[in-house]
Image 1 (cartoon, helix red, strand yellow):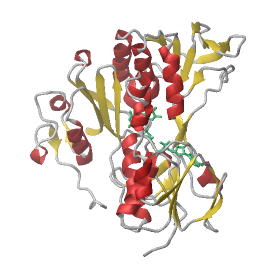
Image 2 (tube, rainbow, N blue to C red):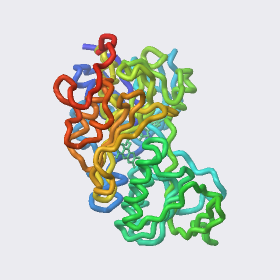
Image 3 (cartoon, rainbow, N blue to C red):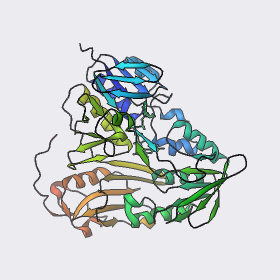
Image 4 (cartoon, rainbow, N blue to C red):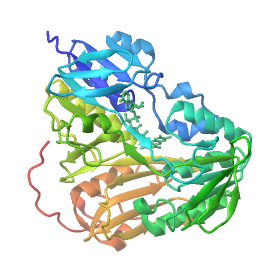
Length: 426
Ligand SMILES: Cc1cc2nc3c(=O)[nH]c(=O)nc-3n(C[C@H](O)[C@H](O)[C@H](O)COP(=O)(O)OP(=O)(O)OC[C@H]3O[C@@H](n4cnc5c(N)ncnc54)[C@H](O)[C@@H]3O)c2cc1C
């Protein structure tokens, strides 16, 4: 039986999934999990949905009870931060625990919200949403029903807007881009989100930035001054302007970092005994034939498990298709695929966004790179199959809801056979 010591840094979803894979893979040696949050690993998606709406208590987001880790003989070190990694000496320094020696190590440190860099950003009640504690603080602020300004119309900003409206708050969203989610869905689908939220009473200031935040004499925020000079009253400001991967540990250890920790398809970093997973990993995706970093739930779920398998010595090719889900009011949506930044795409609509149930596809050179549905359930597997097939499609057929998205042998929407591809690597 191997007595090698495995260490996992990071106490989120990817970390918990790696535990699962390591123990299922039969590795019974010492397994230490270092997480700087005091809470057991938990899921974050409910934090901006049911927990924020107050319909679920935060504890429902826990991935496993403490017993689960005890049964797997995991040495859980929560509330402790790893501060230094030495890949030559195979050591990890942990605040409050000293120096640990490891044989294989996983970095699953996730990501952190980007900070707003304007005057007044450190006023009280200027909030971010990443942790359970931040979710309950924000929920309690929303319960007061006072006006909220949301900076950033990304997924977090829009979900918080929906929750804030459910609490009866007056909500204004300030976004420098011309439409919400501009980089992900483009202007046309972005307008669907404007209409959805406007219909629920949200006000937008689009193409507008934040100049500064202003506060009361007691240090609490009282308003937002936009770049157009408008003053928006706010008892709470929620900042959702994106995230940055937590790469500092890897970077200082000399591990290759470039928009996340660079990994091969087995999630191994440039240091052979060190692996990375989840939001922090920029790995080589064999299907897409490029490095990508995906900061979504399903990637943390899959890559955490895959990295654990890699650590125990299994042959791993982490080749999942990027996938994301969101809930806003009565709109449930799923998005799959990957459109590299700067790619010119044609958007094909299937159904009418005004009906609150439709699909959208992003095409380049006749092939579907990404697809999304709103309230058209049980279609995302077909969307993923279509993207993976790399078949060229007839946009007119694709736009017709009566036509199947994919059919056996790729008839129906497909205009030509896919290009011959190299043998799959997994
Ligand atoms: C509010 C919210 C809602 C979301 N909703 C959705 C959704 O609807 N759909 C979707 O697909 N995705 C959603 N996501 C994204 C998804 O939750 C993340 O992609 C996922 O949590 C990433 O998991 P992870 O394990 O890589 O990182 P994390 O969950 O960030 O976990 C990393 C952990 O490591 C800890 N850590 C960092 N550095 C150190 C260190 N040096 N020492 C010790 N510990 C450290 C961090 O504090 C953290 O606890 C949401 C995210 C948030 C914040």
